[in-house]
Length: 347
Image 1 (cartoon, rainbow, N blue to C red):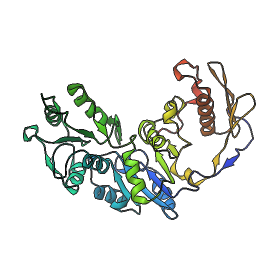
Image 2: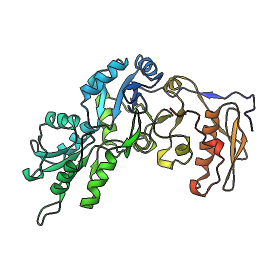
Image 3: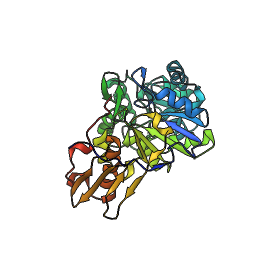
Image 4: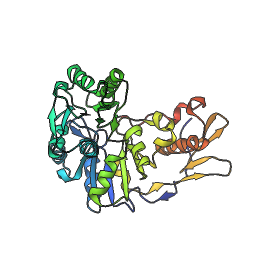
């Protein structure tokens, strides 16, 4: 079946319209590995001409200054003050949990250690030092010995309350130039398996990192730009701000059509430049058909029907998501044609 139909899309406001703040994820949105994603730098610099642009990262391995310098090398006009990290959110949580100056066992890298020391905490790598809490974040060098020290510190002890355990984030994977690699969530899971409890999380999709950004930039009129449904988009929904999913990173069309209600973005774009453009309106016809431009998709019981492929694979994906999401039916019970989740945008 070929693409057909001449009806142009009805256009609504651009995703950026009315936003005072853009919150952009990094891996998979701004860069992949060490290189910038085509068009991302130009789109973000353009946005920064008329509003604040901040960078939210769950990656705890680097300091805010290191992140800012990387972004500057890519061509972004930014400073360390524009970078909001999960270690910053974790330290804010820690400050509400244990006294200032407490000794904290760290599993992670320079980004986490830097924020803890700026927050007035002392750092150790050994459970034998009797730390008051454990803070865990991602770093490429984290190995079995580091995870084991966390387990030793968190082990139950008679007469002692459970030791506070804060993790920067739950990202199961991280995109790298060579492919998808294990993230902090995978490492946290290893400790969780050993100690049989979960930490408190500071980064996306939890709200502390968003609240830190709102407080720093003085507004909640924000748009979250991300590539992951389970962190960026879910976090934005929890923080009650709109979100934009860009198809340059981890989650692909197949994950979008299957997204649960708490992970559905307000906008789906192929590249960041599209956040400046009027966005196609999704219309619901009398028979329940979802129409975006000339693309039409409807539900027939548990069968998803493509009424018209239209002239844009992206609008077809948008219409398919709208029809499936509105049905209220679980994705595993649906028959979905492959054309709806065909990936035309894989990096």
